[in-house]
Image (cartoon, rainbow, N blue to C red; front, side):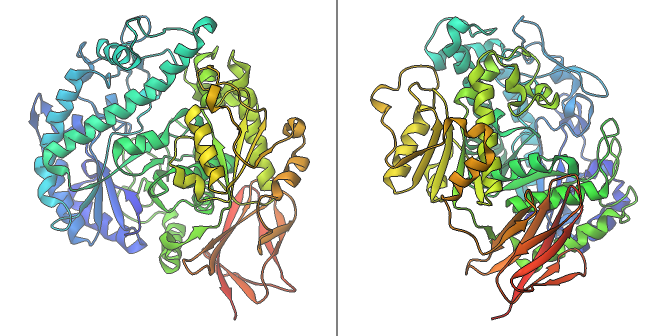
Length: 618
């Protein structure tokens, strides 16, 4: 079923309003209602749980079923939800055996409103035992209400698993159980690195990747605990916090979760380029459903507000990139949150008008069956990014701090002592911008994605410097052997991700093309070069430059939907070239545009996206 969801925190909504809120959401076209199940809200004493009154999860699920909806639950153990200690009971975060450890050996604190707290270690055996007990309590309530006997169809495994946003290379986790796991994985009796060392660069980079592996292992253990709690029949999904693709190994986490791992998006219309990049990364890299588990609808009171126009534009930008599932966060306004689709009394807010129109349009289009036509894969490699993270002068602060500083195309990598990290990011950015300028539809494919994600495209563009992930290099050879065009450059790699010579693996992929060394500063020239990778589409923006058209077709190849994106700061009227006898109907309004001599004029305000249903006469 289509996943067009909305969040409703049952324990924060008075029980008397549950059914009204659910009926309102269903009436708008929401298909899935989701909620956290917070550990600290239900555990009143160690091992004793309260499921009464507004906390009665079972009764709420019964109401969800009666309203004709299905439910996706998020039992953590970490949930955030603006709860004190992110939903962990105080006894958990205060337990020294559970606390994550910093490089200096002390506990790791998260300064999150309303009160800082020491974060748990996901390597701690004691922590996993406690989590298993919590999941058993959830299972007693949820297992009898699994689909088809009840409404529960899916479970989220943990929440935004990125070391509690403390993702600096040497910030943590130096918990004894984590260090034991590191030694077992590395085969090295030496302690894990605690600071950048140029003489020990390979070990520092391995520590960065091991932390991804450690996180995936924790999610696998959480999933096994859910299975043992009687919840093994439910679909699984995960989510990542808002952030750049370089900092999270999405394919690895999907394998750990056993289902789609999406990216949460909270942004304004001024960030459409970043929003689009995250959508293209999801579409190109997931082995499952391109999913945004939390699509900002409202905001926390201590963050910059987003207007309804911001939220509508960002939602359309994600769809224009190919996202096919999402959940509005929040569907029902609640404490510690501003805005949502419904207010605190379960009455529609102004936001509900465009949400209802959008969900109706997606249902009419059979959105989940449509696909954006892409012929080129732009590969996201993390070989240089790991060295950049390990050598950052910002450490132990997380890379998100560097991203927010606006340092340039290299983002936080501009603060790396390894210069290849920033240069690689500039080349990736240049290749993406050049493909957009050439109007070549592309997806961003993670280096760890399966070979099928590479072979789904006719051409593969891989910005490379002097090093490359050895497994990626072999995969490019396999893609070339399968008659895909592979474009690398500006350098031919001679070292692997750890700085070791490629040796016997150094051979270039067959039929490899190259990006010219000066292309990073010559976008027009690079665009001309990359335009040769794909035939000219029937749909493109003739002018002005910088306006993007995204076309979606049904399984028969018939174009059904079109998005026109203006990421710029000025309103424009775009000349859109389309096939003859085409008309466009605004999916959220009433305007109908008809082609004249193969051209349609589309007016788009600054920082906005328009969605059209496409009609073509035979």
